[in-house]
Length: 510
Image 1 (cartoon, rainbow, N blue to C red):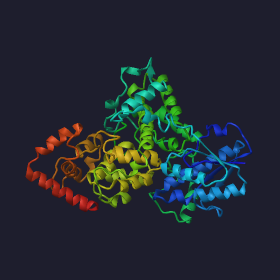
Image 2 (cartoon, rainbow, N blue to C red; image 1 turned 180 degrees about the vertical axis):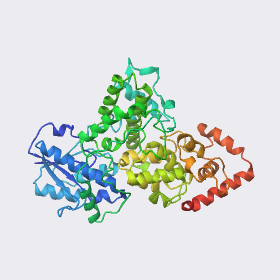
Image 3 (cartoon, helix red, strand yellow; image 1 turned 30 degrees about the vertical axis):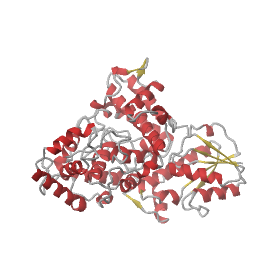
Image 4 (cartoon, one colour; image 1 turned 120 degrees about the horizontal axis):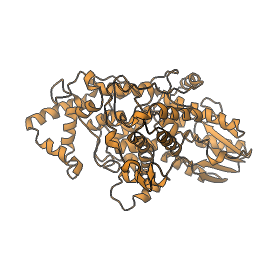
């Protein structure tokens, strides 16, 4: 008898494991306190995972596969992978244990050690999900000083024949990022978000509460954005292609007070638990683009493809190349605590209030809200990256460490010293106003740097540059801003730094 472990983010129905039915194989899925409790998660994230896991077990069971599902409140649940597996190995007289490669370093090491403790044969399989292996990125950048994503992205396009002809890009250029920076001003009209027809969400939520799991965020069963099975995930993808792709690229960096979805696909949860695969996602989207080129511009589809096969695959490669040391990188030596308003949304800064409350209500925010609002403030306020890691990992339903950690430590907080991003992604109020409507509804003045009414981002921005100027002295991409810093009169810079110090010391008062 063979015991096959399926983790909560390995819900791939197209895996070769399921091509044939064999009663000798038992598939086990487990809901465990080990996974719910290592950080405080959003209630919608826990519900989404359990709902998807239960639906997956039901679907493979209906196809004849033999399963064993351990619910969180089951009396025989020992709440850790190791204890549950040892019990099942004994119960079923297992002669071989098999599992798929975990995407988190923590679980990868845990299962390696677990297998060493067994006196039966063990075997590990690929998840058959990603377009690149754990080591492809390391090989691609071997001997290079910088790991520029653009070159990896172009290689992936060629390798999988995506938006290329004779190894050259459609439209004569690889990247239309400059076309992806428009501010949404009320038109074109934004379609409603796709809402999957999830079942039994309330019962799962009730069980989570009854066993005493501490969660964060809000829950609305009638506005739940995460699919629980593959058909729903494919519906969500098709909905994006038919309704949102036409303007995705134009407004993918935009933010708006009254709109939380804009033209984003919101398929990241489905992708990250493997209900759908990155290759099929981009192939479906590209095929739709080809059939509708009269109405959809190339910049829209390229911006989408870049997110999936560029950033997503690249970030995973960085994770496996740099772990485990990556999880402790803090080259800027930032040590401040995370403000309480990250957990409550109670702040007078309108951009942060909207972005955080959106996250608390929906367990989701798009990449610019994460990078240039919550991440930007955290870096400017010199918050310890580990504190922000825990917040990002907990609050977003799509957050799994392999994708969250490099995005936070690298892209957002520059804690890795430039492995992912050649310069920090920081800004004062000007950028936030350029890309959003947040500033127009804010009590702070985006145009001034000092005084009680000045936007906190402004003083924090120049204070950060002054505090870290020695660390960025040799960074060519920071040279212009450092020259502007030098031109600020001493008296004004002193006032800027005094206001910044007040914000950093008492962030929840702003």
